[in-house]
Length: 62
Image (cartoon, rainbow, N blue to C red; front, side, top):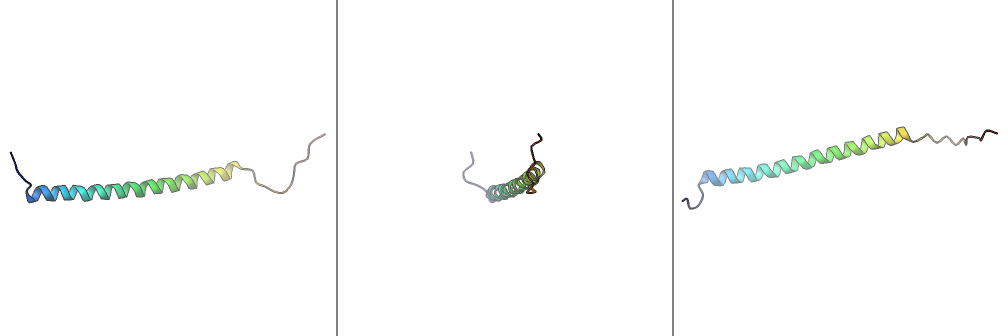
């Protein structure tokens, strides 16, 4: 049975802690990039789908 931690144990735990924080930050940045790209792509799609407004009203055929 071991009591307490060695310096190496503490270092490993601290390294894992900071790595987890870095991984979380990178994941958040990536999610924001993907969200921004999706919004940009959505705007482009919306512009392609919507008809251009020209001010000319089509006349009904008789």
